[in-house]
Image (cartoon, rainbow, N blue to C red; front, side, top):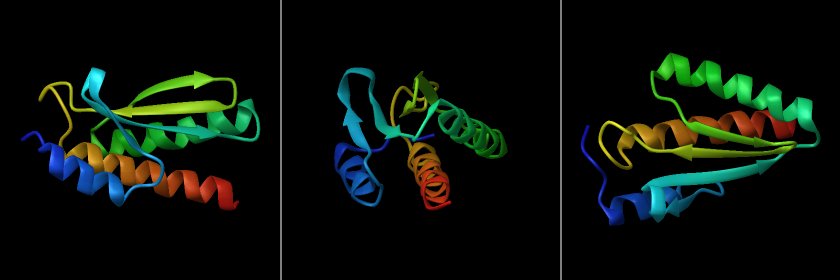
Amino acid sequence: MDLLTEDQIAQGLQRLDGWERENQSNAIRRTVRMPDFLSGISLVASVAHAAEEAGHHPDIDIRYNRITFHQTTHAAGGVTEADMEMAARIDDLVSGVQAG
């Protein structure tokens, strides 16, 4: 997988909801605040299923009702198109949970 350039990452972030560049770990990151712990865990489970289907997995940090997703392609050493696609899928899942 080819790494995205900084310009490509910046353009990709403009199409995503709440994601930002995380330079120190060469990733992109989004934090979501859920109404409570169980709704956060439910979101994480949904993301886990989507990640398994895609074969591309985010790093996930759970702090009670605050879930942070870190997306990077470890094998490539940075952000790839697969990360942008998984971030967009996470956005869809977050929107679905927050709308429901």
